[in-house]
Length: 199
Length: 199
Image (cartoon, each protein chain N blue to C red):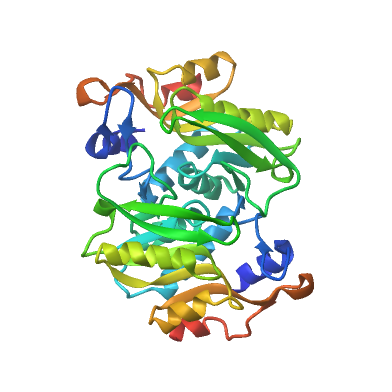
């Protein structure tokens, strides 16, 4: 997705060989027009999959998900990183370790919002080691929902998550795939635009 | 805003005299079409205020904010509830006590995303005692930004926050104002539609 890659090149910062900072438009400040474009791209890439619900994780997954949900006309459910007092019964839970924050979070979703007859599109802002995506898959599997696929805004292809998910047969669509962040430079995986839409 | 009030009546639950659960469309599952309508209503109510940025708080403020940002064509910044490792320098911080969660959170925003020449619209999902809104106002004041007003999806008018903010001269627009949650019933403040747009 060229406008996303251009935005990453112009406003993203490679903080280290593994950390890409995109807080100008995705993780802290949000560019709503770009999120709308991202939502349209997810809609295109998962067209015909019969998606009935989008599942994401608070907080940075919410903006791209809600735009995709608007355009695909389906509800969005965001998994919470811990239990709140107004949500107590009927929770599905899983665990996700964050390497960035160096902590394990319980994530949970109310079972009533993920059901057997749902076809779920999982959306997240980043895919690196795959821990967050795996936990969201775990929640959808606990609910016995069908999983349409996994839509990722930025995949760090030099980390193992994308490979692991594809090896397990998941349909993963990443709108920008980073090959390398060495020496402060951002390099993308070379691919024809939308080539991974045919995987 | 009638469609919001209808949604609250049909899908909201008064859990107690002070807790309204709206996790079907706002706090956990999100209705993107409704969020788009809410964004349009905020745009209408703050038209001509010269808003350059929307400031909200993760997580439930993000969906209505990003729709308002899309329609008003301004960026959204969400304050984070604690520091993440990729955000260290140049933070503005404040504190907010959550009665629901019974804990105090540090909230922070990168100073570079809130500037002196910004005119900020603060958006949040709920207004009850006003602690979250006050902390967001504090962040905007630390940045010496101009505050255009405060847009709230659901105000619990029987709690003191709305009165306190209006007494301090803030332009507060709440799209649904709850008068009472006693005995499991949801009662709205009687007002002509949009009457508080003229306050």
